[in-house]
Amino acid sequence: MMDFIHNGPFVGVYLTLLFIVFCRAQGTYWLGRWGAKLAVDRVKPKGAFGQRMLGWLDSSATDTGIRSIHKWGLVVLPFSFLTVGFQTVVNAGAGLLRIPWWKYTSAMFLGCMAWALIYSTIGFAVWGAALAAAAGSPWGIAAMVALAGVIAATMWVSRRRRRLDVEPLPADLALPVIERSDS
Image (cartoon, rainbow, N blue to C red; front, side):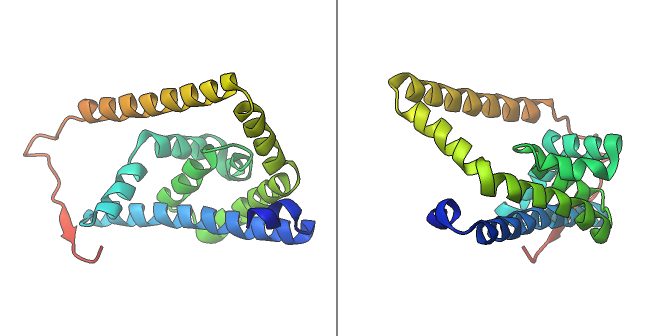
């Protein structure tokens, strides 16, 4: 697949990447819609995967996406595709906000087209050149390992803080949770 992306005809590569990013964005949106439905129905999934996804949807990351949509409106959707990582939380936030599918898809498709154009022209070349330059030198390899360590440590500390910051509701305010059997 990577050989096709690097050496294939431009139109074929562009359409392939457009299809991939479209499916990924739609999947993230529908994951958010699923989480919103569970919240409205006050249902908690039984399976580990469903619980993990619901935990991510209830994280500060998706709160960032929701706040961005509230602040800038749907115009943030296409612009989020020019970033790395932010587009995921914006797409999930759109689903959590239950933005109508046709409005979401109309705004999202512009971002998909821009993302596919960037990655079918210079995107993968830039990533490849940066990794090759870093991997060609011992200092580059050390910098990549250090960066990976900093990212892992930051994620670990952030998750630990979130767990410690969560205070349970008093028993008289707790809402009932219905266990769903079809996970």
